[in-house]
Image 1 (cartoon, rainbow, N blue to C red):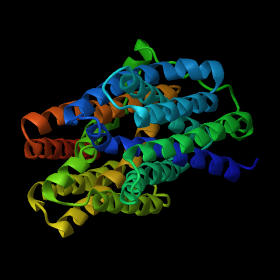
Image 2 (image 1 turned 90 degrees about the vertical axis):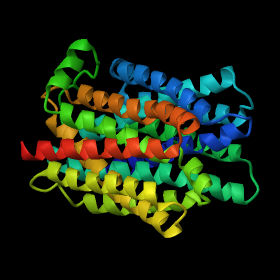
Image 3 (image 1 turned 180 degrees about the vertical axis):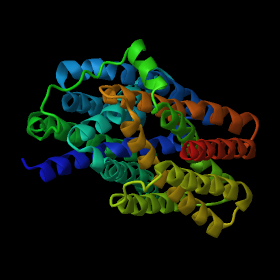
Length: 385
């Protein structure tokens, strides 16, 4: 298989499994069918966080044993099983907890190892471009799944139908990753044996002492902003009489356009200055949402601005993490990057769900805006260093 075809199979596998993450935005609606509220969503995503952190920590050791593409295939099987269990769950219990654990285990592995696999078949000067393409396919997957769910609901199907459908596409992804395991070796950039990906306390300390610690902390803040605005968007929209699909469609389309454009952009002479500018736009989108009320035009603008700010800055942050990694520690650095991302994206909803139920949505959005400003300012300070 030629390198272009290999990358095609890889990106197709990423696209087909990414829809699972987008369905986490629909958990409030799914849980509402059996009386669950936003607190329950936050609690189950906290369970997912624990499973995610465990799987990311162990993914390097497991991939050393069976190979990274093969482990990605197993992870997709876990995600597929999780979505099926979510679809069939009708009460709080073991099935719901098991689904949360399987989702976290699968996503922890796919999110941490996909960039490592892509790094192994791309050269340093190609990183921003191919990492941007990776995030295009991730975004196309998880940005479209809430829209698919909304379309199914409008046609009279139950919300669980969307979970079953994406469970099937994720199983196809597992097959494609297994195929990659048989074909990837001739295309590795380095012809030496792959560096061990095992993550232990010593390698964690080394990563957090390297220049990569700054983008790693930034991704934690950015993931919290993303989770705070996206995971409960169905709740925000219902409170204001808005259609949440407008936000997700505007966000997805904007992100895909921005990331395709980034595929021809190397980050500029000062990538962190670029990141800072984009993330101040992200903060502006959250602030606009705080004050926009039920204005549909402003709601559309929020989705577009958030897509420009968060969506366009994320792949550059990811690429800078890889480029700032110490020699010989790229796999561990990307695993720590994934750890901090998932602490934010699955852990922050625990705080957000509690705030929505006990304090209100506006204080939550103010907190999200402050986190966005903090991340942008970190990038600006790094740019001036």
